[in-house]
Length: 225
Length: 259
Image (cartoon, rainbow over all chains, first blue to last red; front, side, top):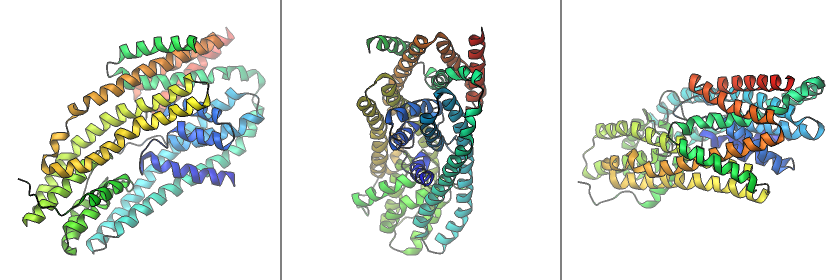
């Protein structure tokens, strides 16, 4: 039942990614925080969200480009981490597995977006002929049904991903103890990758001096705070 | 010369503004945003064309093809209805003129929107939220930074959507005067500067934090930064950049631990 609830709320938020509004409410930082709040640990949700956010921020919805579905991935990854951490000693291992699973889900999600657009393409011809026949009200109906199709596609993806994660999570206990220390660098690597990807956005704009200044400020803030 | 007579009032323009939030809902490979555009134009179509046959022709024309940045599309919506309204008032229908206007707007609306919002305002605003979560320990301040992120993004977002409709409607064919990337340079540069300083701060803060825990973590963090940057520059592929960087940085971490 919990999976159904998360899938419905998550897919409602996923609409904000590109289908309607686009107000940043679908960003991993927001969705992971909400997942954290639902599971009773907002701070952990925020921290998971920040890692996921940096990783997926490079994806820009320019034109009809096929984007990794960051929103759905962040919901699945955050839920997986929130559910597993209380019963599992190694946070870093869960975190890395969660990120890898999130990457897979974001890829499948992007395929679902393509499928939605293909469905819209089929609908387009029908809508055109209906409008030609004088039924202009079909436009509103089409917009509503396209939103609903996207909603149910994403809800089914989140539900399936969460259900599948319940099957493989217990297997994490079987990871040999000797391997566990190797995952300690997981959070550092993921945060580094996020920063490196975003650096490509700002480096192009001749912001080198600003980035250097920011680095000095960041180091100073670490010692001040 | 534009006539002083009007068929549309502010309420109709506001209704188009609210409908513009759904402009991408039926994005498709044949006509891209055209269904969303026609849906947004519908309140104006009802006012401009009392005759149903005329209204249907109007909608069919706009169903053909349209593409733009979703926020900046408001400028097109406003100017299209103004030109259609003018033609109806003067009883000189010229669908070709509207089509040429629309086609001329597609390029600038997409380019300005992508440059201003996707490449600057979005990453910079989100980094403000991330920065708050990284720097503050207090949950209250972390949540305030999320709120600041939403405000930094949505104030210009909603302003562009709303002013686009009204400016487009006021200027009609002369809408190109407000569609110049130079007009948005100050905004773009301000957000880029904020984003760059914050990215540097997050990186500097995190590096020291990881080094203090364990020097291998500090090295792994830097390896992640450098590898992701280089692989993205080389391949421009999200999955390749993330997965290869993850794998290589992990291997480096394992080697350092074993040594």
